[in-house]
Each structure stands twice: as C-alpha cells, then as structure tokens.
Image (cartoon, rainbow over all chains, first blue to last red; front, top):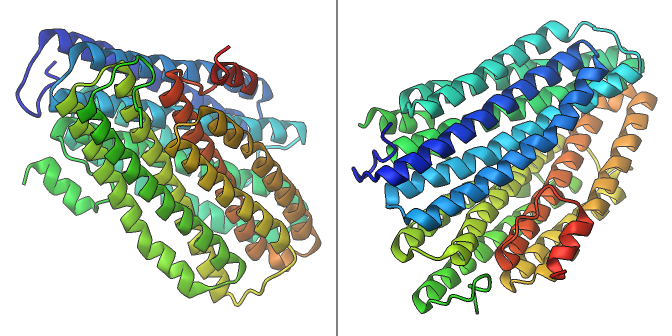
Length: 239
Length: 239
C-alpha cells in the first residue's frame, strides 16, 4: 500500500502506522454499517430487541472514534509527516467523525423503532419505499468504505453521486407522508416518526458522501467539498 | 496568548500562526451566528428577501471552512508542532466543521422561511416558543465562541450545559405541534415545516456544544466527547 501518493514521499514507519489507522477506520466503518442495517430492520419489523441492541452498541462506536482520533494524533506527533501524509491522517480523522454521526443516526432510527413497537405498530404501506431506501444507503456505505480501503478516487466519486438517489427517495417518502397525514390524521404520530426515520437515512447518505470526499482529498490532495460534481470529476480524472 | 498550555512548550512562530487561526475561526463563528439569527428572523417574520440573503451567503461560510482548513494543514506542515500545539490545531479543524454544519442548518431554516412566505403564511401561535428557542441558541453560539477565544474551559463547560434547555424547548415544540396537527390537519404542511425548523435549531445547539467540547480538549488536552457531564466537570476543574 502506498499512502503517500501526493508528494511522492515514502516513509516505511509512517506507512505501517497509516496502515493500522486505515484498518481501524475500516473496522469502525463495518461496525457502523451493521448498526444502520440493524436499526432499519428493527424499524421496519418493529423489533424492539434488535433496536435496543443497536442503542447499547452505540457506546462502542463512540469509543472507537475517540481511540482512533487519539491514535491519529499520536502518529502525527511521532512521525511529523509531510504534507501528503498529513492529509491522509486528517482525512482519517474526518472520516471517523462522519462514521460516528452515522452511528448517532442509527441510534435515532432504533429509538423510533422502539416507540413504534411500544405503540403496537404493524408493518404498513410506507415500508417498501423505506426498505428500498435503506438497502440503497447500506450499499452506499459499504461502497464508500471499499473506496476508502482501496484509495480509489474514481470509485469514491461514483459512490458520492449515489447520494442523489437517496435524497430523491426521501423527497418522495416525505411527499407521500404529507398526503397520508392529511388523509388520516389519527396516524399522525406514526407517520411523523416515519418521516424522522426517512430523514435519518437521508442524513446517513450525506455522511457517506462526505467519506467519499475525504477519500478523494486523501488520494488527490485536493479538497472537493462545496464544489459541483463536474469539477470533482475533473479533479478525479486529473484533468 | 499562550496556545501551548498542555505541555508547557512555547514557540513564538507557532503562537503567531495559531493566533491567526483563532482569529479566522472567530470571524467564521461570527458570520455563522449572524446567518442563524437572520434565518430564524426570516422564518418568524416570513421575510423571503432576508432568507434569500442567508442562502446566498452560505457559499462564503463554505469557502471559509475550506480556506481555514488548508491554512491549518499548512501550519502543521511548517511548524511540526508538539502534541499540545497539534491538539490546538486539530481542535480548530473540528470547530470549523461544526460551524460549517451550523451554516447548513441556517440555510435549511432559510429555505423553510421561503416556503412559508410563498404559501402566504402569517406569524402564528407557535412563534413565541420559537423566538425563545432561537434567542437561546444564538446566545449559546456567541458564548461558545467567546469561550473558544478566551481558551476558557470553565466557560465552555457552562455553555455546553445550556444545550439541555434547547433540547427541552424542542421537545415541547414537537409535542405541541403534534397536537396542532391532530386538531387541524389542514395546517399540516405549515406545522411540519415548523417542526423541521425546530429540529434545525436543536441541531445548532448540538454543534455549539461540540465547539465547547473542542475548546475543553484544546485547553485541557483531554477528549471529553461521549462522557457524562460530571466527568467533564471533574476534568475542567482539574480534579
């Protein structure tokens, strides 16, 4: 693995440290992806036990963030890396912040699942759309972590672009839920809860996109936040 | 200003750089606070012009984040700081991420203001609570930036604790809005929009709390995320 693509500098000691950081981030990414999967499953199937498992596991996610963060700072202090290597570590620090926030959203979804279970909710008409949106976001997360692992800016860009489909899933669930509420106000509490869950999934997509942007920053040495997709593509293609 | 409290090391060149970083973060904090103030005002008074001004100004917030971030990386490369100084720079990098996200929430509120203005909405019964919550969050943001400027961990802790009052404002607006929707389903669209705005303000409070936690990390050299308030207090008091 070459972690120092930006300026050509290579330090074996730094590379070993960076390898360890990347592996820890991948472990955290995998844990967080499972949290999201389980939380959405728990909400769709009103499975309060699974939801409680997600909530209690969130401490582990938080703990990982703090540990990896501290490890990154130690590596920076020990290795005094060059600009390119420094960017790689900063990208890792930013990635775990987004992973931690994805964990928070999973916990939020799990709480909604418990409320739904307590209210005796049954699977109802909005669920096929939810299931689709949930599958999409989990896939996006997995792909974002793969792009991060492979230092693949091209793949990261492709994954980042998937966020648009999730935003559009969310918009359509939102419109649909408004109609349901107006048609049948007795279901408002349930539908508002469902809207929150949709919003949480949409936010997870945003965070997954951020992870992709950090991967591009890490590989290409260019900050691609807040610029449009065509510009990002030009940077990734090296034009 | 002594930016190197953690390990006693002081480098004049680093201190000058750090001073510049702190000033830039304060400028960004001040811009973002104004964005929040204006967005909430625009929503309450359905002032579409002011809302549009907030939205167009968000680019400047994003641009500041990218510029300060790059400046921080340059300082790290140039100065190869010790652990304590490194933490101060990392705290600044994290702070601007939260400030940028506060800017996003302000934009979100501004978009709701425009929707409300287009729908011909008038100031209605939920507004006194909104105004209170908005005033509280703006004050919290200002105080968080003051604690950051003064490297005052004690003050940062006090400000962080204010987040609870905002969460509770939000919970009560949420409950109230549910009741309104059930009573009068014709107003659902407007009330759902109001709920989003309440949620955005609540998230701004969370980000302001994060800023306070980074200030404590910066001053005390201890990561206080994900631990309870009594533990944070013990760290701040140096017990």
